Image 1 (cartoon, rainbow, N blue to C red):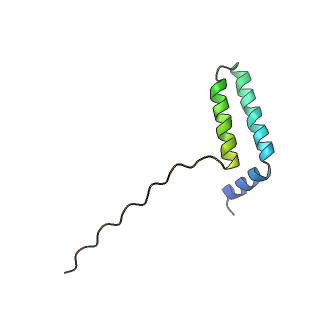
Image 2: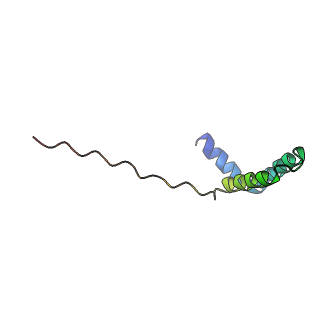
Image 3: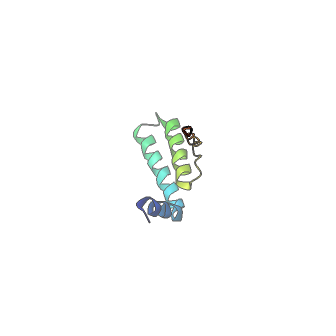
Length: 74
């Protein structure tokens, strides 16, 4: 089991704590910036929550390139 697998497991087992930490971090940023970037902070909080939940949409995968044609037989 790799490091990322371990991390994903911990996040999924403690989703409520992760969401709380994301909220607190955003609140601290809002406080330090006096709410100047509140809209951006909210967007980042939502993206972080989606990523932690595993519900963030993945970008579409490009199809693999086509194989080059075989050379003609002689």
